[in-house]
Amino acid sequence: MSDLSQNIRILQIPSWYLPEGGQFCKDQAIFLKKRGIEVHILANVMLPWKKYKLKALTAPWKSFESVEDGILTYRYYYRRLPKQNKANLVRWCQRTVKLFDEYVEKYGKPDLIHVHSCTWGGYAAYQIKEKYHIPYVITEHRGIFGMRSSLAKESFLPGYTPFLEKGFSNSSYIIPVSEQQIPKIKEFLATEVPIKVISNILDTAFFHYLSREPKENFTFVTVNGFYEVKGYDILLPAFDLVCEKVKNVSLRMVGENFEQKAFQEILSRCRNKDKIFFTGWLEPDGVLDELKGADAFVMSSRVEAQPIAILEAISTGLPVVCTEVVPEAVVSSNEGYRVPVEDVNALASAMLEMIANRDWFNAKAISAHAASLAGPDVVTENLISIYKSVLQPSLL
Image 1 (cartoon, rainbow, N blue to C red):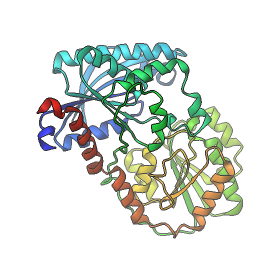
Image 2: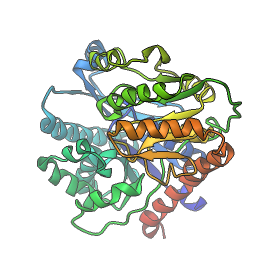
Image 3: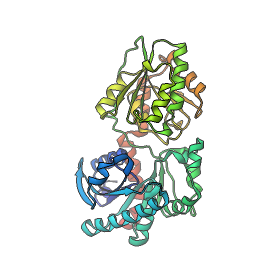
Image 4: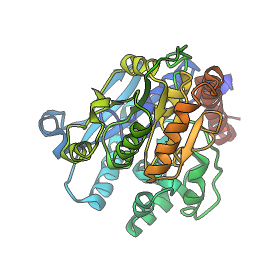
């Protein structure tokens, strides 16, 4: 492994990146670098006009590079065309290939491209492979491949199939973060490609085990902004049902977008809004503080693959109530309760069970489970093994 590490350069191509998410990509690069692998990031960041407004106008219109947390990052800001999903797909991939051309002119060809999600970095990597003959692997993060809700199933439009087939079928390895994603991924394979599940990476030294003392008031926490896929129209009615049975209970919500009209309408129907507290978006230190003050984590999502927020929670020893979009490998009966998607009564029942059985869960064992699944040493060792299997013939 060490010989391989000293001889390769990995270029990560995330399908979305900061400030539009994608922290997992940077985290992976940082920990791979600690293992002696040179990692760069090629980030064609799609900026929606409606969301960013002034930033979409004032951000650089040309590619540029910077060193972010020790990782060389070659960037471009792509301005998304409103209501033009297919056109955005094609144009984003074209611009990513052009960005790669610029990168190669300056730094030369990387040994391997590591794509984060086939939509649509996988298709861009396929085009790069056709031009430069550079192999690529894909880590698939998107929860829609789990096919656990109608929203996930409706996301696969027929027009996207050729792009997914090219992206997946021409990769050298596919790395889903969940077993649940594999059946749908295989539908897009025109040829056999090796597949291995590897977790997202988590800084378990930062999100470490936290000792908690039981208190009279039971506090649930959730760390997710307001988006349709997060199912807050399920969580808040479920919380109302919980409050009918238990008086000393509260819900703390960490994240952004809760000022939006759609969420405010959901909140207006909640009978126990006085027991819900909003922190806004928080830096990791703030998230850690919220996890420490909570008794359990709750997630009502319609679509997930392997949520970082839950990994963070269980790494601190916090038990979880979540929907079945979260893999059982992450949350088994030892770590909490999984319930059907979009089922208010089932979610409320599981939350009540959690309150009643808070002393049953072994916090230290929950934390150890997170480390065995997502700890940096475990994940980087698995990734390096895959890099070796793809590149070793050319290094002999």
